[in-house]
Length: 411
Image (cartoon, rainbow, N blue to C red; front, side, top):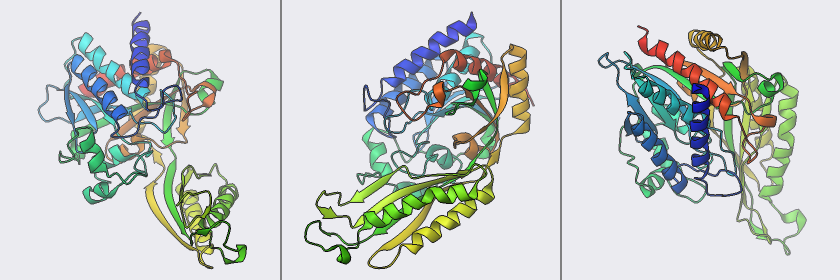
């Protein structure tokens, strides 16, 4: 009965949050510090208060809902995920983890539990990097990997700074940003798999063993603008042609490296972006991922060499590393506890590796981290067709509830 009640409440949360999109009928577009962000955070904060949590935000706009424990100044057992999206994404990437965390707090409230160690529900900003680039901004900022100066210098594609955007929805960027790791006892995150493995195995829960390493590079190619009709082909320094040559060769770098290494260009901006103007500047992203750090580093160097090889004949190239995260093995003790609670609840699970980056990988350097995956229909994510069963989210919430009870009581 409890699982059914959980499923209904979770589906309500998902449906409500999915309405906060800038692209109705065309997927979820919820960029950080947008009006859709504001509506979502107000919903999340409202539920936190309803479930008896003390609500606060930091100087990045990360949201925290805290249930105090009986131990004075004790570190928190945190559960959560992010609530931003990619453009035209789905309803489950991020919010599934936030609503599962909310429902753990609801179960604590319903059962009148007062923990020894505080329970803290966390909703993080800009995990996707869709507005300000780099990704994992909320978690990186929280642990001090994103400094104040760098944060203030970030701008979106329209030139709007993080500070301007925060002020635009009434957030306070002057609030404390960095969190002392001593205030964190553990962090649990639920996420949709974003791949086909769990669905194909017909298993509702994946206990994540490790998360891939990744880097995000930004390449800038500069040429010379000119008239599309009057500039001879042999006199051109076309930034887009040079950029296209680089991008076309990138997949072969990952294929040559092997070992599951992947490389992606997902964002490309052309300037001045006129149909009758030769482009004078192109800026594009390069995302490189692999389970072993050596393969990430190898492809970074090959990418740099490729980019540099296109310099000359009026073309200038530069490359900047926006993000670098090493492959991370998650905490063995937390993994064992998640498996133990799954078995006690009679919920089938398997071990799984994550090919996507998550806030959990950032926090794993600062506290004990555990992560669960649930199946994604047809393995799809980052698209309107993204879908996961709310009953699977409810199962994960049950596992987290039992795990959180153990962690908040353990010395």
